[in-house]
Image 1 (tube, rainbow, N blue to C red):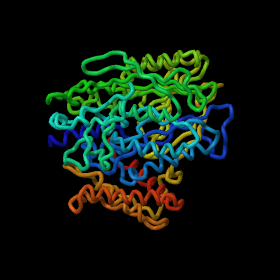
Image 2: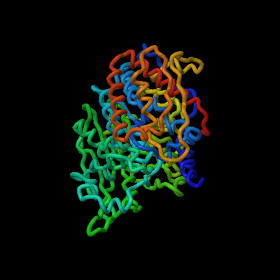
Image 3: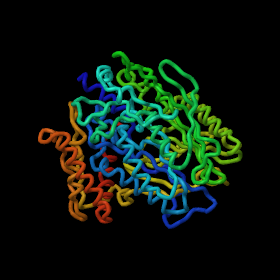
Image 4: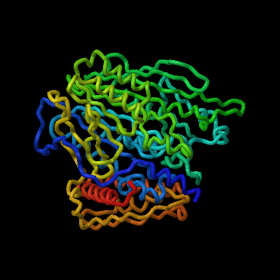
Length: 549
């Protein structure tokens, strides 16, 4: 029973979703209707949570998750096809209504926090936005293990025996964070639950901590010809602190762009058999790194993306209740000062601000929430109200009203009701007045509607012991690959003992061949249409399932 306590506690505290309807007073426009051309338009999506299907399991993946939280362990159909719903929803949002020059992704591009998940996300959104800009706020699932903790690390014996080419990791390049894993590579799982094995995808995918995520995102900004400078602020025996800024007069698509933040470089030691280990608490400090971004939507409107997951202490075990990044948002005084600097920037004088981030305001502690709202209030003139757009809950779009402003909370592209939004901001009324909202399948919003040829079954997951996500997804990938439009689809039962018949490497190759064929089949519009229907059915059934929350 002792072995079950931690996973049960972990799952119960993870964020979750329930079946809810839209709860917003923002007018939804018909797809054939355009908004007033004077309004500022932009697309917003969140929580695609691309999931590595090739790795081993984690405690957060036990069957109790389905009771505690509906979205902690998704149906295999959703994990396999999540990239396609993400791409389709963005493309549809960009097509409808007024032209928008930017897509905002409000966090959780990845699910486990793996570099391979990020690469899939990056390829997908790049394909979905060929002629427009996309910017992203950091979410808890982007660099915390399963969105909750930063306390899973290498063991000292492993670190001390690694070759110098691997350990210590090179975490800085030209003064900026380096896209380097802090974990040693492996071509097969060890048989023990750990972050690295959950990220295994061949040998190319490894855990992605906060500064590694920053390195990948900065590389994306470089593609827009945004140059980032890093200045050493202080040196320490345990870590070095840097200020990070975009160069003056930076722009993206000829519109002003500003980035401000900080990052922390840990100083590793390995000499004469002496090793400074990841398990030491100073290695949590890099999770205090953050980026604040400001981008001009047009000549009158500035969107500010903040980081709501600056949680240095998000340790596992006895600290989980009070620290986990899944139920606690964190801003930090340094970031608050940088947000203030952006609001007071002379370039933005007289402009309207729209703030956005992953976490909801009620997840911040009382003091930080108060300070952040005061900054929001300072950005508007008297009698006008601020706007903050958030994600994380996986609920359908809903309003959260505060005395001086409004938080607009949006849902996920992967979980029910699988949504994206094109918002229209009015400079006259200083608020979002209308929207074009997309769902992957409008038919299934009618909970009594069913596709007769799609039979989704939610099979139970192991409640303890070792198992592999690879085995959970293998049969489903084969069934999706072989599915023919209008034929009956029945969710196959997972074979959790698939590694008894073939090795992990052999099954990985097999699963990858199924995925490649699915990708090829998706070029057929009729096949793609069936996959979207299967996704929508699985997502709705997930949302209708029993949950403590």
